Image (cartoon, rainbow, N blue to C red; front, side):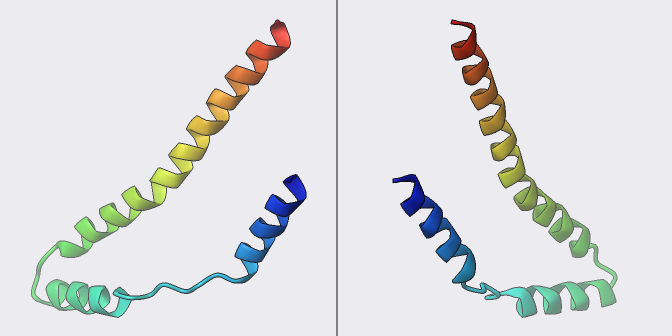
Length: 76
C-alpha cells in the first residue's frame, strides 16, 4: 500500500499541470494602476503572501499534532 502511494506521489510530481490563467491579466491591472498612481500592487502582494503562507501553516500544524501524538504513544 505504501509503495503504491509513493509511486502515485512521484507520478504526480512528474506530471504537473501549469496553471497561469490570470497572471497576464493581473500584471496588466497592476501596471496600469501603478502608472495612474494607485497602490493596488501592495494589496495584491499581501494576498499572494497570505495564499502562500497557508500551506506552510497547515504542514506546521500537522507536524506539531503528529509529534504530540507520537510522543504520547511512546510514553504509554
